[in-house]
Length: 362
Image (cartoon, rainbow, N blue to C red; front, side):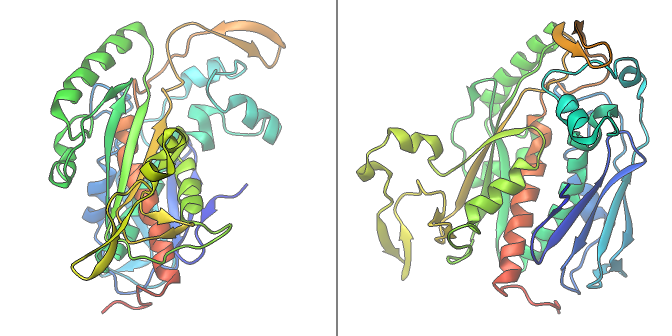
């Protein structure tokens, strides 16, 4: 089981949904970076449960506990350990139905992989709750990227087929004021109505989150296995609900001609850029200096209260299941800060490898 990501800026995830805690250990962070508990908590609050109609009623405080690596408001260069203690845990429904495989979850695959010794409560290690650790690592990574002018953004662009219109950077930077973290208020209203409808039906919805990285210098990444897209995709697929990742024009390139997909090179203010950005800021696995654009497909929450067909792994008989408990109608809004965090973690690792960030910050 691999729980670590990154070569220099390395993050190791630990904890389970209904265990004592979830958290992250970060190694390779330069010393001297100003970091406060408030910096981390502010970002954690963006993915905290119970924030809107789409969210689970599980009322976790999600308060960060800094165990090591930060002293007197600065990183020390030592491993940073950040923990969130699980408090509002109710495993009753999982104990009652532990033998029934929940459709859309990793119950079956985890049972086979670990011989039934896996923690099945709340999905255990496969739960979206582990992404709280990703968000905490993203705070450190983003602050490091800030020192070299790289900005990371993410926003909801689609829920249940309802697509937000293209928004400017100013609107995207204000998405925290929106209940669904969407820059299009008109689309948000339609999304909220769709969420209310499926909530009453006992069902769930999926959607798409778009991530942006601005001011990324050209030259990060390389062929053929350590491509920037490859490492970004790996990081984003670590988010349990992600089922698809595309860069730039993405799958739409399959319908284009070369003359439509190619981004013409031009010179602007003495700098080589491209006139369009169908490549999403990456060519040949290497950043080209244009804004990085990546979109992530988030599946509908698999825990739904509607009756579903399944198998009892103890009796080996087919049964029906209605999932009880506290679950998100749609996790897309809560995935937004997680997507931006994983982009930041990956780019931070690349920036440190390229020595764009010094080992000691002064």
